[in-house]
Amino acid sequence: MLLSIQIGLTHEQKKFYDENGYILVKGVFTKEEAAMLRAEAHALADRLTQIRDIDATWDSVRSPNEKKTVILHCHDVQFQSAAFARMMLDPRFTSIAQSIIGPNVQLHHSKMFIKPPEKGSPFPMHQDYPYFPHGKNSMIASIIHFDDAPIEKGCVRVYPGTHKLGPIDDGGTRDHSLPKEKYSVEKAVPCPAEAGDVLFFSYLTVHGSGINGSKEARTTVLVQMRDPLDPPSAAVHLSRGQGMMLAGFDPSCGAATAIQEKCEGGAMGMGGAMEMGARQKVGVMG
Ligand SMILES: O=C(O)CCC(=O)C(=O)O
Figure 1 (cartoon, protein in one colour):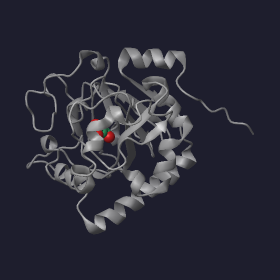
Figure 2 (spheres, rainbow, N blue to C red):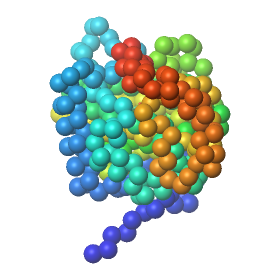
Figure 3 (cartoon, rainbow, N blue to C red):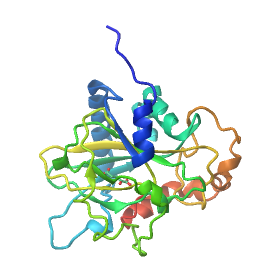
């Protein structure tokens, strides 16, 4: 039987993305593929928890009075399992990024999140922009769902249209979370997803998610991507594998991302992983 495979966004989907700053694309990966990737993610979390604490709960959602919540995390999962590398290069996935960013799509970083059952940490509402600002704001996140993420599991929530506001003043919070009075998690639009669905959004779109209070883990990998001609405004949030082409080619032959390359012998050569470790410790995770 021939299955119809969607390549890229439809005209209607692109219109929705342009207006709202996000789009949930159904069934990018099959349920079987999602189940295989879920097993890879949980096996990775098991391996990592043997050697270190991989909780990445943000400071601003830790409360000494409430039940401790946890979110298991790993950056740059393509260095941990080839299944994730294949996933990121899959044309069903990259063609959608191409519809948004343009023909050339470059990896910034990836990260796995597992929100454990009944105690999966929330994410306060925030923009990703302040973590890794870029000159042309081409950066997008894509959250690939490996299991179903209904509202009660703490699915991602967004404030539609906020990508048009540019960078929003966070008032100097350490983790760049936005004021709850204006951007509460509860009032944001939930994006419930099923295994295999992918949520794409701009790094300017205000987003976050609630607690996983359900009986099952919520398992995702987030892939952050940019146009290779969009220069980083500062040498921050550097990581292994940054700059890898996921679709098309880099017309600048690396020149546009020169800040990052200059750092490869120094900060990146030995400190990339260390920098991530330090950021994880203080709960400041872009
Ligand atoms: O996975 C989620 O619920 C949100 C993740 C997120 O907001 C982020 O990593 O910036």
